[in-house]
Every structure is written in structure tokens, then in C-alpha cells.
Amino acid sequence: MKAFQVKGSFRASERAWQSFTLQVASEDTAGAEEKVKTMLGSRHRTPRRSIKIDDVKELGDKDITDSVVRHQVGVKP
Image (cartoon, rainbow, N blue to C red; front, side, top):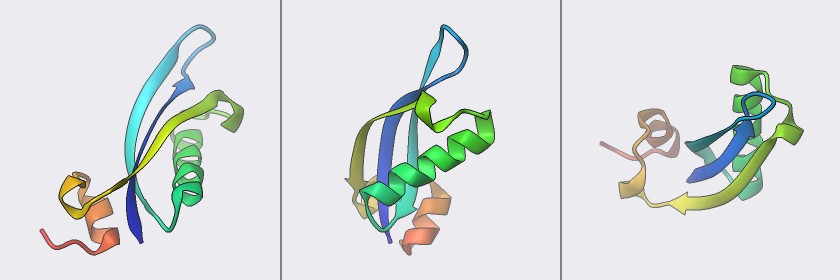
């Protein structure tokens, strides 16, 4: 597993877009995008067509700030 940082925005209401930055653990960038769309759809009831992903970046071990992602990747504290 690798750690990725995904940046983008989603439609929070008819006129407003909410930006987000999430860290996720995945095998590749496509899996990271899929996981983010799943998480946002579940948390905010946002359809996938209302989620725009701008950037997906692989993170090094020292750049991971999310403790769950650190555990999933296998990085010691």
C-alpha cells in the first residue's frame, strides 16, 4: 500500500463548492480517487458527478499526517 494526498472540491449546495484535501492509502492513483469518491459520497451524500479531483500526489513516509493512513501503510511512528 502507498499513501496518497487527494485535492479537489465537491458541490456542497446548488451554488457553493467545498474544497477538500484527504490522505488515503491505496495501491495506485485510480484506487485513491475511487476511495475519496466513496468517502465523500457516504459522508455528504454527494453524487460522484459532483466531485472534482484536481490533484493526486503520492506521499513519502514523513509526509503522512493521518494516523490511520500511517497504520495502513505500515509506517512506524
